[in-house]
Amino acid sequence: MDAITRIKQLGMPRRNNELWTFFPVNKIPNVLGADGDCRVADVCSCDEDFANEEDFAALLPIACNARELVKTIDDGENEMAMLKCNNDFGRTVLNIGKNAKASIEILDNKVMHEICAERFDINVAEGAELEIFFANPANDLPLTFRHFDIKQAANSTVHFANVLQDSDIGRISARVELNGEGANFDYRSLNILKGNASKHQRLTILHNAPSTVSTQFVRNILDENAYASYDGQVVVGNNCSQVNSSQLVNTILLSDGPSVSVKPVLKIYHDDVECTHGNTVGELDKDQMFYLTSRGIPADKAREMLTKAFAKELFLELPEGPAKKRLMQAL
Image (cartoon, rainbow, N blue to C red):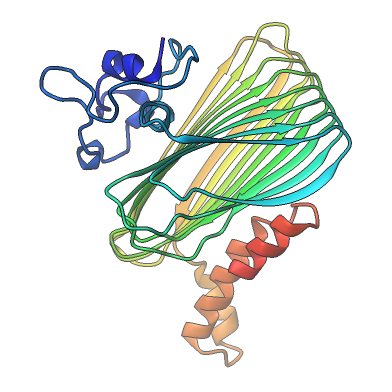
């Protein structure tokens, strides 16, 4: 089944679809005509089967005949790369070879558009290490989607990190399959939002093998009328013992206007696991503010110090390398 046919089956995203619970779906341009015909493309050039794909954002680049970029890093190689989509719709296939190490930075396409959608299919072989990250400057692009489909083999590690500070509407979605024993997926995201910015993240992590690890660590710094949402689902399969999964979302509200929505979901089909989730929302710590101002630090400077510390702590545990350096520079 091609992507266009699957989009026709699913229809446009609706709020009652759990994948789009918090997203302003009324802002998505309708790609389906009144008769159900798909306006994005007449013919889908791919020959892949998307019968099981549930996410509209994952299908859209394929249905729009996005030019496909394939990047392969051979076994044992060590490589750095930057990726940038030059069109409104893009698709990238990354193949990370056995025991290879790769650092990939994703850059924004800053050309004004009604909607931009990118899809990344990432295959990480046994023992490979990948860091994928982005920390682009704020821009005024109206609607952006980024979808990641990640498959990890045994003893592979993926560090996925980003700083989001765009001023309009965006969504990051990811489906991660930990298919080999010892696979480790680490996700860290920081939203620094103000104005009417609206940022949404939707992750599904499938622990399909024993002794796998996943971490979801997200922090939000929200001001004015900004809105952020995080929807994270962890699924631990049968016979998958010794799984360790954690999810933590911390939010600081700098004024009365912003808001945040968080929905953790755990589906566990084995009893020998350790899975946790947590969520906090509040203002800057008043005791810390008092401590700093009582020592002569102006209130504005004290707020800046505390918010920077809150942001930087998120990335401290990343391994030393291009991702950590770039993210810290962005802060």
